[in-house]
Length: 307
Length: 283
Image (tube, rainbow over all chains, first blue to last red; front, side, top):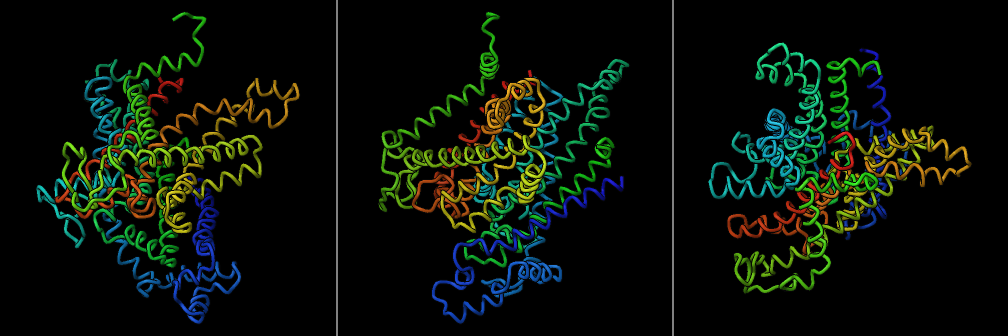
């Protein structure tokens, strides 16, 4: 077990290194002179030179990379070109709202996804199955930003149940954005739960349980549901990364003060230090979540460990 | 069915036709393609024609989907938007598929160093959630539709490469490929004539499933202001313009959204049908 964990940890190191090189080299990929681009159209030569020195662009590439990563490890992510404040400070302000949104969205999506998937599996081939899967395929096809706009229209503007946008720490403000964010993942989870459930239902131990006269309700919940949940939990973990990506769109729709909206603002004003830091942050989260999922899966399913 | 006529292709067609939803979806997609091609003939108005006197009118007999802030006919803009969404969706997946299939074939066929390189690169691409990768690419290349196509292609590529690599590994050792090798077929011939067709059923299924996702991603990028720029009649960009008028002019939000939703829905249903028909494991 430990050996497997160790192997998985070692395997992500090259990925992390390459990801960090990409995030750092990001500025170098810009067409033209990055310092000039960042300084803006009407900057004088002195300003550009200062910026170049400040960003370390006058040094060789490996030196730039190691200086940047060294600073990152010390918590120094540079300064935002727009607000002139440290990027670390800007990000820590917005980290919590994004995580709250993502966790709440994940909770919705697991609850709804597993429920609809289980209903479709238990009533396989009946109208409940078709209804659940129709809702699910609609959820996958629904652009999140449209769902968000419709939710604002109906629940905030007309019914007035929830605030239109923003986040000041109240639960009511979390309802619409988290629901919107979770909808697509819920649809994916429903399909996945359905197929996991059907796989389990064709196992021999289910036939055995039925043959020895276990009531159908008990077969479903005790024997089938529990075993079907194993792959579902894994899938939920993997979808968390997708959810973080989706938060960019949802945060923009709901004017949510999180990292996603910050990223879009940074793209718009070409705030490259912020973009670099966010790319690094998002991809590291993504890689570590996948690692965590792998490990949890290995704990649940011993076959994986001995591959 | 006459037994001599039961070719694999016919079986697939037969299975596909049994899925009524997929058939309806296919017809809808064909209709949509026709609408996109003949947009100038179908659209009742010029999609760029502004008229401030007609700003934000609700749906009526003259303007079935109402008008937008600048008095432009929304239905006409949606019809022209079909051209953009279909083109962007199809090209980006096509480019991603071509690159991904080639890389997957090379990776699976040659193995060793090339395989390692290609697969580790795709691991890195997988380390960024799809839309973030697209945003990063647009941040480098600048906003615009062509850059959106590039961005969406890049993040479709690794999955195609993986699918094809998997089936290439399996087919490489199959009897007919060994037979081809033993009669002296060249490496390129074995790769492209003998192995590639065998990998295509997986590719086709993923291809159709991917179109819907690509259309949504492209529309999202335009919504965020990174893709199509005003006054282009792109569905996502139209929704971005409607944002400030929720509760004032709801039709501006509703109709372009329905267009995206139905298009993506029917591509997904079509893909589901194809998967059911092409996957021998499903009945």
